[in-house]
Image 1 (cartoon, chains in turn brown, cyan):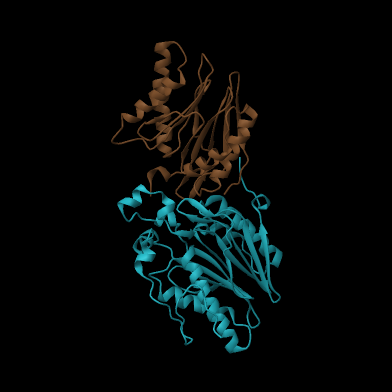
Image 2 (cartoon, rainbow over the protein chains, first blue to last red; image 1 turned 180 degrees about the vertical axis):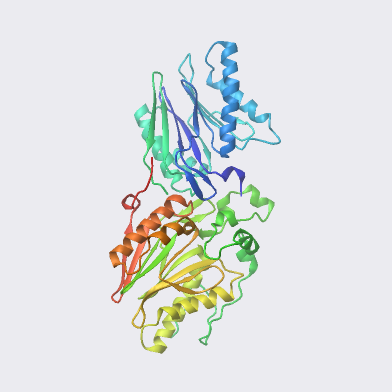
Length: 205
Length: 275
């Protein structure tokens, strides 16, 4: 069985009008056995920059820590907050350095440009090939289900509240069809002046 | 007139149990029998989910998604409890193909006769085929006998199939029901084909998480409603921990009057420690 589906989990991000949203499930398990329902997969890398790291849980933690190290050095040298596009390139570089012995994570990045407040989302595969579409990105063990839900529900220029509804429904209905994702959900809505984090009350099976 | 089952193309004309040989290629797609034994070395009662047992058989399997190459499995949580006057049977409702939930409202409580039901776990195809065949044999037997068959007869037919074809099947079955002579009975027929009567039985991949719970909470002489609550709590706990179990809880209460079926939805199930 695939190493990327050993722990299970999923992340998705969507663009809205002047905002972005990123959401994930909260399960941590070993194959079909669930061990925790409060596992954090999305990390805050800046006031308006979030990264989700679905995949092998040990690599989720390691990549987050290594990335935080590089980002801190960048911000010390440049004396400014990083742009999401540059951060995406930094993640891609970190992953490709391990081209022949990769980290088993498929990052999803969501953020707002610190100067222009332009919404930005990006996703990449486990060796760092970036993908920066205009609508939504998905990753994880129920990626196919997430693709279907997002394709059906997403529309351009959603307001933050509508975006929250859309992303929550897409996430929950997708991981209800996956045996190794779910057990709770978390959604972050990132706007220019605030970030709203909500926990979803979901089926715990 | 012998009723034809849709499963088989030829029908035995005598009453002993026969089954045309299953071609190994059909069964080995996504699930080799050798890998089942490798995955279940210790316990014959618990059942490993299909995810742990699915082995890649070719390069193309590595490239195609899990759900194209995996067998349908009712990796599951099933349970049956005896009480004075009948049995309570219960099951979850998830059928998974690899990690994909193929059916989230499955009915795993299958009728064998009006008073005898079975709870199916393991390969969906295998258990459906076995239940069909047992159904046929019991119907025939009932006609010959002139009265309702005994639960241990049904269990015995299950055992004969599961034991004689043990290398080709992945089926963990709990056969439970009521008959006039012995009242409510529960028979557990796990992977290798052993058949044992128990006061209560649990099975499926989710059962491994609740052995401690049922051992500490079962009491002899529970009433029908106490048994129902016991089954609900146990299955809710198993569904909460096991990835291959989930959905709704399907219950059946079998007494002299037949079966009373209930469905308990996800939001009505007992909830346990959560942050």
